[in-house]
Length: 398
Image: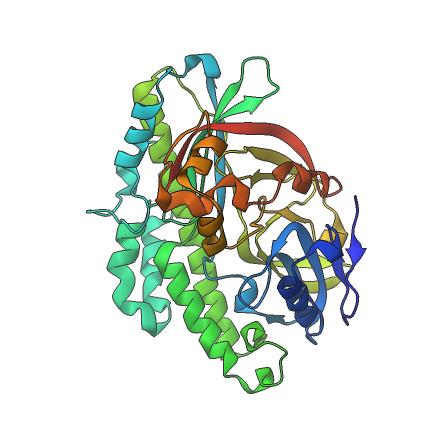
């Protein structure tokens, strides 16, 4: 559909949805971002909604500056997926045991591991760099020095909220190819690092006159920027490794139940992160908060909700969007509103045919609380092309 410009901003704010359909609080956040002196431009994804400081579903390109709130507190949160050799006909009629096996293997919610992951004991896991990665923990912000043990024990765990593990069937293919998919991030350690740096940024002198103090930035060449980037890169790597551990464990769970399975090359993408990129000859720091990179040929993952399916996509490399696309359907109502509006009976109806939790603890994740993923995909046809449309048959939530 292309984009429209949001009125009333200094920097261009390009919107891949109806600007008048954006919730007023989110629209004001976008205008606040567009007024910042360091902003080169903003691309607003069709799943945009209100967030802390910066909207979820926004891509912000800054010159010589970065706002930690424009990354989000779950640094490196993202998706992983892998295509299997299985087809729908290979799956058992009763998927309950498969779901139970996944939940027994990968801790969910606030749970952590009794003992930390030993990479060499995890079949199919990338073995390189683990020792060097963990040694860098000692260089992180002093305020997290007592959290190293917890970070070790949360490596390879899902978390809660909208994080999930799914077994999906490809739609429209002759046999219904089976895919494995998961969504998670940097767990508690990423949140702890993000919150400490957001607090530091808010008290820097150059941030005193901002329209929203949560949009406070670090400036290039300062000790605060260097400290944030150091911790940011580490947390993004933690998130990537966390997903890799879980995907390897998930593949092994399926292999134990269906030993004939083989796997393709995994796809992995962050959707809360920072990247150094160049557009129009200008070097910028791009923050994607609820958005994936969609450079020309890049494979990405755009999930819907726990009952509506997901998409594997290939980026078109649209520079107007800073080579980005949405990270999912995006919420259309808050968790508290969803709990008031929907019941467990609604949840059962909206997740019919999916082996998943259907209790009050996940009503806030009901498909009705999210935007229509089909419409979201239509609005970004100039950003990505669809490679595969997947529908979950098993969904594990935290």
